[in-house]
Length: 210
Image 1 (cartoon, helix red, strand yellow):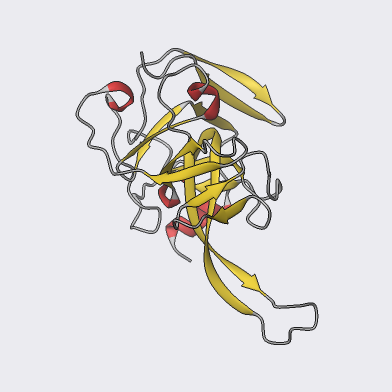
Image 2 (image 1 turned 180 degrees about the vertical axis):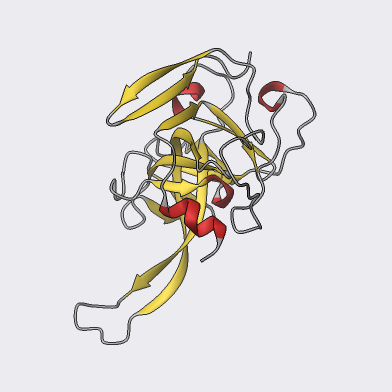
């Protein structure tokens, strides 16, 4: 058994830090709540996943295909496994069956009010890619998806003191005890307080960026 697997089996600490902004994969992400108070909209997210497809209830030869899922980030949590930390995004996903379509020009459109499976909300932050949703002038229910370009962390807006988190699939740092907790990939210069959420304590950051 690897050291990483041992830490995963022990579960993360109950104190979970919650952020409203996070820099990873070359993108600057925000939660939807933050976007409501900001002129920029950085909560759009997409992830590619494998889905089982059947042609009918009697189909005996289902196939697995890669599909893109679209949504908005509701929460950013950092799970602390002592030896390493893992960031996850809790997202509201669009229903791929009724909330996604393609127009005659080849653009992908989504209806953000068509919510998908609410029991499968979390993705690892390093899986996320950023998208923007632009309202369709012909039909306000639908938004056109625009793919975001990678951003450089040049000291602007959200990205001060935010570094890119290494992929969870890469080799993770190991340590013998809980003393080695000096690695952090998100802002640490903000005031915050712990709040009760279910059986866990969440440290809520009051401010991420000016």
